[in-house]
Image 1 (cartoon, one colour):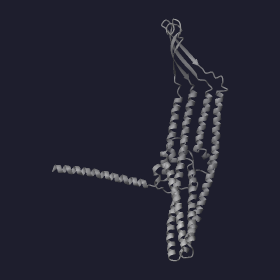
Image 2: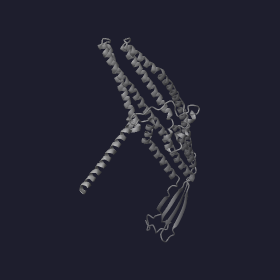
Image 3: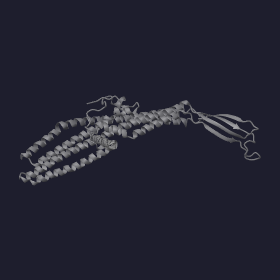
Image 4: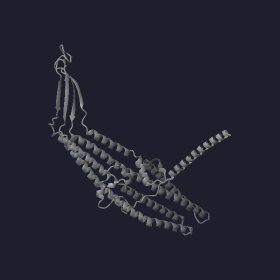
Length: 450
């Protein structure tokens, strides 16, 4: 009896474990399927692109390397150990003897270059400026990732929207073919109408093929940023009627803090530090040397002390020339920064004008053009059903409606791309804060315009 109870307990325990494993597998499958169906929002795509970026990690490594070099640059150069034999006879009775001749000495010494503290500090500051430059480059890279990911996301969204319009119209074209064939069989239509309806459907099939190719291309572009989830359905489009940018008088001030401009400003700081270092190099660094010399047992040992000082007799053609080069580089960087700022201001103002014009035209299309073409198609279709118009007029009205709807989507896509370029001139705050440096987007006051 106890054996049966033991066997029953073992079987029950195994069944319980199997049930738990099956339940866990089912839950995992459900969660995976649910995740696969979760729409991909624009913000989620940007965040994932930032997480996947290797360029940001490269900039972190560059900044870390520069900080390490800054620590090393503050140290004195390594001391130099010096070993040698002086005045060794090479002929006569004492040749090659290191103890017989009173002038022969075996020496050991150490030499230390005494680099000025000011110069070591400037060298360290130069590497610290390089670290800040790497962080500025990281901010610029972050901005580019957010902008390019947004453009790829929007391209796929509007490619799919255009493909949906064609798919919808293909269904309508199939219904028109059925109607044309029915009218022909009933003697109310011509065979030409049937051919015209089929030709219109073939043309739509061709356009559908083209738009499906654009969708595939858009998915490939989006996968470059977000990886395998690029095939996931997209969430609703973002609001493109406002941007995080003041387009008024403060635009120049805001753009002066643009990541690309900030990068040149950091480069200018590096060049300015090199100017200070070149000025400090006009003062020579001394070297001191201590030497112990051992002679034969019959002679006294000796100690030598020495100081080495570089003679900068040609400063006019050496140190002064190097300083002039560094000063010229500073002026070069300043000029490049000023020119880039002017170019950015002009480019952004043109984009703002095009974006506002696109919004105005898009409102007109949605308010007037699209409803009018739909009403015309409805009217022509009603006339065709009542025998007052021909199929050719229906096909023409349908084609005109498709073109207007596609034009509307194309205009909206172009306006959305301008919105993305304007809205992500600076990095989004929630991602910029992760950079842990002073150039986050909170430094840039922004104002929404609507």
